[in-house]
Image (cartoon, rainbow, N blue to C red; front, top):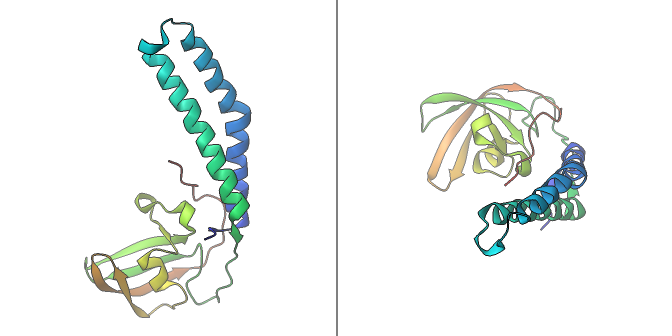
Length: 166
């Protein structure tokens, strides 16, 4: 399966790879060298932590490179009156009896705390392609519920939604 990414997603990932390979890799390698000088490596917690961070950085670089290599590049082709990728949606959520505002994003930018909802999530799948006034059913793992789209602000990928990292 290929991840669906926008051109800006890929650009941000390339920028992260550049930072991690040019700047962070050097800093982490220097920290490994510095802590190695502390002596007995079997009891050197600082050295082990420095190696762990260096390895985590290398793993993240490989992950990003693989994501870019296997990505399917997508664009938002939604009509001006329907919910599409990167649009800001205000909806009445029946299960919470509240209105909530979310931005629909690609999976890699998903961040619920920042109101960034993946287009692959139950909510994202339910509202994509619908219009203001539509009531749609969300089939979530916790059960089905209805949302009514109250407001739609058309938006483009401005690159402000962060790329998730582990």
